[in-house]
Image 1 (spheres, rainbow, N blue to C red):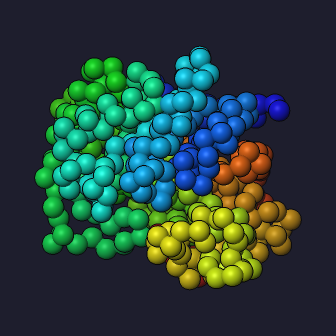
Image 2 (tube, rainbow, N blue to C red):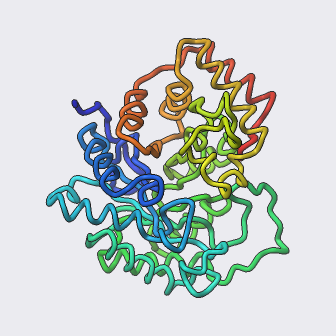
Amino acid sequence: MQKTELRKVPLGQSNLHVTPICLGTMVFGEQVDEATSHQILNRSLERGVDFIDTAEIYAVPTRKETFGATETIIGNWFAANPGVRQKITLATKVAGPSRGMPWVREGKGMTSADIVASCDASLKRLQTDVIDLYQIHWPERHVPQFGNIYYDPAKETSATPIHDQLEALAGLVKAGKVRHIGLSNETPWGVHEFVRQAEQHGLPRVASVQNAFNLVNRAHENGMDEAMHRLHVSLLVYSPLAFGLLTGKYDQGGIDGPDAPKGARISSFESVRKQRWGRPDALRAARRYNQLARDHGLTPTRMALAYCYTKWHVTSTIIGVTTVAQLDEDIDAFGTTLPAEVLVEIDKIRWEIRDPAM
């Protein structure tokens, strides 16, 4: 298996350079066992993808029994393959406020002490001395996220100011435990405020924001694109295939019931079906895009990934897979250029149905 030519690109204003494809690992420890996870990690490196993303709360769907399992699997892979850690750009995340996961931490918020404790625990599970990119998984503030679209100031419970969060992260950088920092599931105001306060107080500057972006959720293009471009912060895209909706696997049998694909993420977990990916409008929209791909001689997967791979505002696209074959398919899609007429039709569909999975 030959490496795919993946020219590395700078991550924000940091000194990190990453591949335009990143291996997402949240299924390791739930849908994917450790042996298969290691096979996927090995193949990823063989194919030239040496950027790995994980999080303390993984595997997903989150459960007490699998909390930290993904980081542990990756750590075991590092231990079993001396020298591999030095070849990898490693990203992980500290969980935001609990969101109904008391096993993450005792308090409901995300204090400065929580950030430090979570980082130390991640380092231990990952069996490494340093994390290249340490991200806040979701804001400590109350903001619309994970399918919620309205901001409600009455629900604000923030207790740890952004300055305090940056101070805690600065301490981790100074201690050599973290090289650079990032955000995830963030808003235009949030990324701007993190950058402003970092520059004002001489604290670490966020290099990236990891947000959802795909054909059924292009909310990033509603203002976040300009904010990140002008602030020189990179976008890491997650869910480019919308949890499988944009692979075509659900087109015939739907997301639940006897005809739904067995073992697939949305059909396997009720908690996922209750989220944005399980909305009927999201499936209807995905079917439209998937048929457009077939009409132009493309697989739905190739079209959806190529759309992300070639967007000007995307620095790296995070792909999540359960098999080596899926990994190869996703990497093989890199380099695909979508015809102008396909891009026009994509925009026509979006104008009609907007962003049903935002």
